[in-house]
Image 1 (spheres, rainbow, N blue to C red):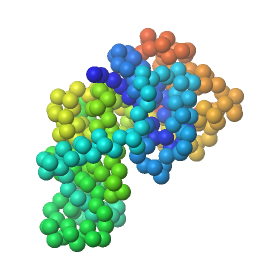
Image 2: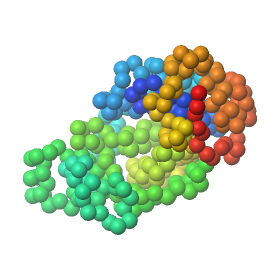
Image 3: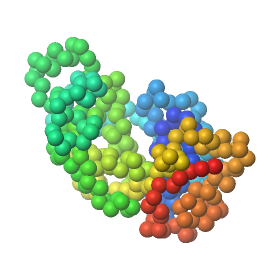
Image 4: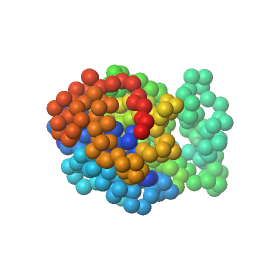
Length: 297
Ligand SMILES: [Zn+2]
């Protein structure tokens, strides 16, 4: 099995930056004869906006992106995530973490630890300490990582080496955490090509490490990554909903059609405007612009 994927959070309409990444996911998948899968990362119920899954899919189709299977919803897959955690737990690779966000921020950490990395506070709790803390707070589950860093190879960025810390596997409300769910779903749906925005490049090594732990080194090595440049606003910051007309619906109000948006995205990638299959013929990953693309209407 082999596949590419596009995995949005259904938390509102997609903007042109999301659509550009999706076009790239489609181009990378099609140019390597992989099916493209759609996966909704809807584990955080508080962020999910009802109906935005359907609207996102309609917008993706409006710019010419088709998928090869019915979409997957992470919120319906807790069984497979539980199985993965049980497997890790059996091997002694899971521990309970009682820290609040604030405690993690304020804990002393190693001098070269990356910002936000977990300082390991709960790694060595005694049974007694654990009992005491469990009476006050429901724990999250963390991975007992056995490496400090891990390296993956990216089609566009070359080697990416980044810190691997004790990532959260299950949040303290009981839902699977982002890294675990992404890794399990990628593996179980045959995804071996990950195309996404380059602000996620640093999470690739820890996800690959988790994939190696769960499914073996060969499965981890088989994944092709392509972290693509972000779309930014006029100030150079990651494009966001507040940056004016950035969704297809908002752009339609400005008399900009989905086809025109598609064409602008393709031209920004150095590709000919027109239907996606036509752009596919000209697609060359090595010729993609390496700089962020500045969106303006
Ligand atoms: Zn902790």
